[in-house]
Structures are given as structure tokens and as C-alpha cells.
Amino acid sequence: MTAKVQSVGFIGAGMMASAVMEGLVSKNVVDSSGSIICSDLFKEALEKAAERGFKTTEVNRDVCEFAVDAIIVAVKPNAVQTVCRDILAVENKTAVIISIAAGVTLEELERGLPGRRVVRIMPNTPCQVGEGASCYSLGTLANAQDREIVEVLFGAVGLIREVPEHLINAVTGLSGSGPAYVFMFIEALADGGVRAGLTRADALKLAAQTVKGAAEMVLKTESHPGVLKDQVCSPGGTTIAGCDELEKGGFRSATIQAVKAATKRSMQLGHVAEIDITNKYNL
Image 1 (cartoon, rainbow, N blue to C red):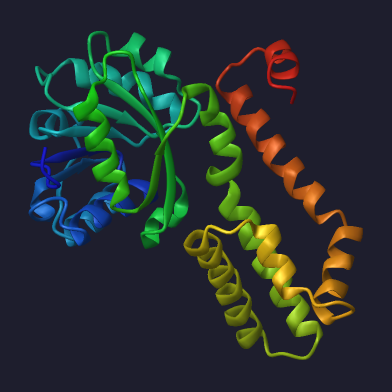
Image 2: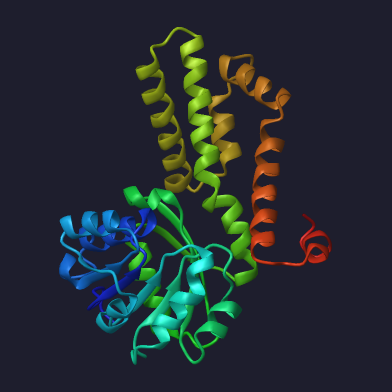
């Protein structure tokens, strides 16, 4: 398979779907925006998509008839079964079905789409700026070409990794929910700068760039973050004094607990038994 795909359909044209659609065009994964079609219940979402040159429709079946390579299900979990019926109503067996519906398992997807190749994926909101972190799991009928399609599509908007499905909940707790934790840290870092005398505008820019730069150092150097932290902390200096306060405030523990809580909630939404959440996953 080449880097380009022929056509892709999106059922649901919200924030995440729009981000992926834009990424496919900007990274030349498709020939043009006309190679992508989307459906949605809200006319405003379709109008925005049409302005960007994407094909639009109010009928999910139109999406299924158009898409050759992949149909991406980007709807709320409670709408997935209705979407599955629309997909089955069209004789299109070539396109792999990729679901980004939170908490909807591969088992549920395969039950609603018997005989179809399905993939479950958890992206995150930085897909909007081409810096997403997405993890996926293949269904029992999905093949190597489906894997390549998923990696081409979502690799256009950031990092993409394959994981066993039982880890999708942990991915939700970390990278799925993680942007919110980081936004809170950026806001707090900027508040600290304002408290120390900086203007709000300068403090926010400096805080955001500091987080971005630190993240790039971890990714590009592949050094352990603890090593990079130690390189900044000189004996008796300003940084170690600040780190000391973060430790007193339970910074690390609070972050770990946030990931655990979000992971647990993801399991609950996916109908994992409470006894398994407690005993099997220790959450």
C-alpha cells in the first residue's frame, strides 16, 4: 500500500474528526479534500466542513457508499449502534471501520458489525494541531493492511501506537485525558509568573513554550525526564527550591492519581466489572 489512500468517510464531523480530516489533506495522505466525505446531525458542522472543501451529507449511508479505504465512526457512544445499522445497510466490504467512540469495545463493535473489519482507537485533542498521541487496537478480522491504513491516517496528525485493547483505558487516562492535566499545569505555571510580577500575556507564552520545549527535549533526546530534570537542578539553586515545593504539594502523587482515576472511569464507562477494576487492574 502507498502512503496515499483513495477515499475516507467520517460519520460525525465534530472537533476530533475535523482535526483528522485537516491532517489528511495537509500531509497529502489524500489527493484533495474532495477525497473525504463526512456526515453529521448538525448543519453547522457540515457547513464548516463544506467550507474546507470536504464532501458533506446528512445521510450516513452516503458516507459508507463513498469511502473505499476507511469509515471513521466519530460519534457519541450512545449513537454507535445506530451507526452500525447504517453501515451494514450498505454493501461496502472494502473499508475498514475505525471507531473513536470512547468506551465502546471491539467486542461491541464486532457484535454490531458482524463480518466486518474493525479497529478501536483513542486519539487526543492535540490532533487539532498535528501533535496528537493516538493508540489503537485491531479487531479479530482486521489485517495488516488495516493496520497500515490506521497508521497512515492517524500518523498524519501525530504519534500513533498499537496496544492490546485492555490497555486502551490506560491510554485514555494518560494521553486521552492528559492534555487537560497539562493545560492546568500551564495555567498554574503562568499564575506563578504573574504572582512574581510578569504580565499575564508574557507569563502564559513563557509557560506554554516551556512545556513545549521540555516535551521536545524528552522526545528528541530520549533521555529519562529525571535525568533532564537533574541537569536543570544545580545544588542549592533556584530550580531545586521550586522542585522541593512541588514535592511538598504532592505534585507527582496527584498526577499519578489523576491518571488512575481517569483510567478507572474509562473502565466504568466501558462496563468493566467493579471487581475486575479492583482486583485485576488494582484501581
